Length: 71
Image (cartoon, one colour):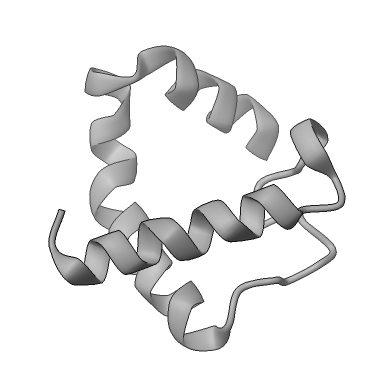
């Protein structure tokens, strides 16, 4: 990963580890607690706009679980 993506990955991992919802964490869109700093949220949105549609090909089960959580 490039340094910027590595930083974003570390930031996201730290946020997930500290999440009070644990394994029951809703998707960020549905979460009542917005834990990302605005700059990091914007960066993550850019990554997910690119990666989201491709996720079905590389991680189909995770992609389907994500879609179900969004319903």
